Length: 130
Image 1 (tube, one colour):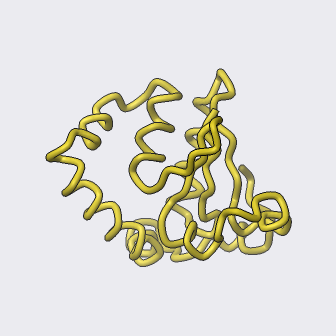
Image 2 (spheres, rainbow, N blue to C red):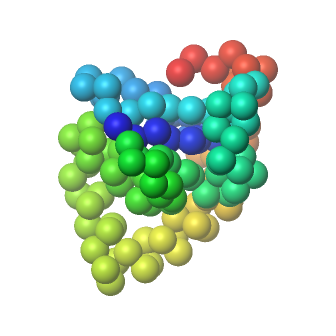
Image 3 (cartoon, helix red, strand yellow):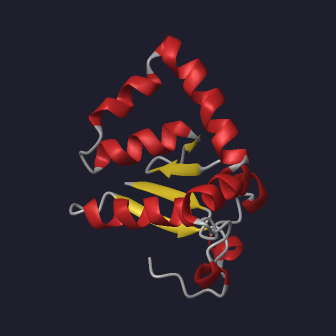
C-alpha cells in the first residue's frame, strides 16, 4: 500500500489522482488530499506546506518518500506506464528529479497554461470528485 499526499487544488494533480484511482483495481493506493479539513489531524507527521511543495507518499512500513519516487511507484503499483521506471535509473534520476522539482514549483502556472485553470475551483470548495 502506498499513501499519496497530493494537492487537490491543482487540476493536473487531481486529474492524475483520479486516473490512478480508476486504475487501482487491487486497492494498492490510498489518496489523501493535503487540503482536506481533517488532514493535519489524521496525518500530524506530514507537513502540508512541504507536501504542497513536493509530492509526499508513505509506504506500509511508515517510510516517507517524495517527488518522482511517489509518482513512479504509484504507476508501477497500478501496472501502467512501465517506461516511468527509467526515471529512477541513477543517471536519469538526477535530471528527472530536477525537472520534477521545476514542475512541482510551477504546477499551477503549468496547469493554467494546459487546462486554463490554475486552481481546481470545485476542489477549493471541498467538493472534489475523487
